[in-house]
Picture 1 (tube, helix red, strand yellow):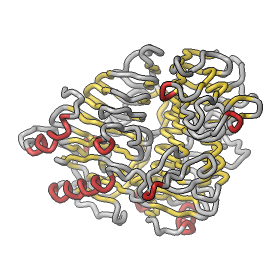
Picture 2 (cartoon, rainbow, N blue to C red):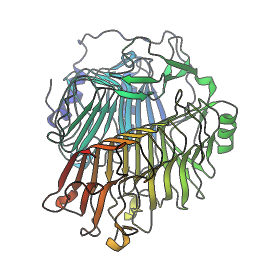
Picture 3 (cartoon, rainbow, N blue to C red):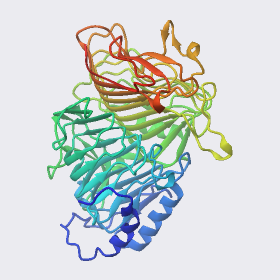
Picture 4 (spheres, helix red, strand yellow):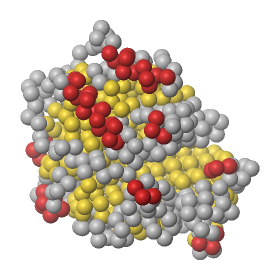
Length: 585
């Protein structure tokens, strides 16, 4: 396979020009011309019969989005089932997706890649993008997905190697339900979570690499190299996706719940799940009123959010079991007047996926509530799913939220959440809308429900507990956190008499909890003398356990984390910047 090298960038266009003689297995094509839904101007449906036009439009979107870190523009590029000879470079706020039932139904002969050329190879801020449900056959044998948080790589079949960096530092990441025939090279990735996939091999490690249900993954060797490998995924439903039936009709496929799963969900020619006609969805545009969307949800319809900014002064209310709220192109809900953006009743089988939640300038008590407080029902047989759900507080504009997401229902599944209080911004004029008194957020995730499970949980820069877990039998598999950069001094960063707020707090009354593969990092740039007493605080009981925990004092020692879990473990500090703990208790 080709090596991971910057020299491959310039050659890709010429490689594509010479691909005409490559023989490939046939894909399943749509037998009837699909009637194209009106998804609005920011959805490009790629027709393989017009490759030059499609390539030009894809290139134009990338030029617009390559550096658009805090833009309001959102795009979805949807490829009809067929073979496509394309070069797809994925910029900010752009989703690439195949429209087949299986990844191999939509094949790109070329590359579907994310680069960091715009930032000199540093992918540390390559956020907010995704690619899913495609087969990719790069003629040079390699592709690149150089990203950090909120950049999912899902349901992909890559016939080659995959590089996860672009030479400079990167801070990802999430890969799930994929088959990678070659070797994944993590390069400079600080951490990475891979689940329910099959890979040809893995090369590289820095701080925290975790694998669940991944044939081909390296064996557990934490802390050197820092690999954590579990044989399967206990319970999970994959993210729903839009597709076109062979007769040309449009639908959404909701994969079935899997237990003790290993490898991708789609290796069977007929994966289990539900086919829901698009006619049962309200296809919303940014101008669609919240009252119209709520009326559709109350009437038992699902909701498809097309790309754009939805300014909400009251929440979307999900009241019926089995409801799907699916976003295209990182469709964004922006809070106005301090509203909650999504409120889900205590019902079973709800899916909220591919949605971006943005705090507004008037503080919201909550941005999302899953079940009202005091929810008690069991949803074990049909749990709700939150997938590719991203939250932003500040950065593009002033944002304020007391708690970003609160889960009160039982048995909820989280699959790739990034909850981010902005540490930077790049609006014209130099306004970055960050700082301890401007864009404020106390808590990222609060879990009050029982038997809640998180896969790939990223929470960063909140001002109190990043994650607060009050429910019993909770589980987190892979956790990434950076503490807030901006406390002005130690006196301002105290949880009562305790130095600092734990990055992961399990309440004192909890008797059963498990978290595996945790990385918690300090970067107290406003005052590097600040000390966090413990990265993780939890009850000292046998049923509460933590495995393979890492703490780091970034920048060579910008702050101190005195202990990893409660009073266990040495301090991450200047001169000893990385510490690890294999098991607690």
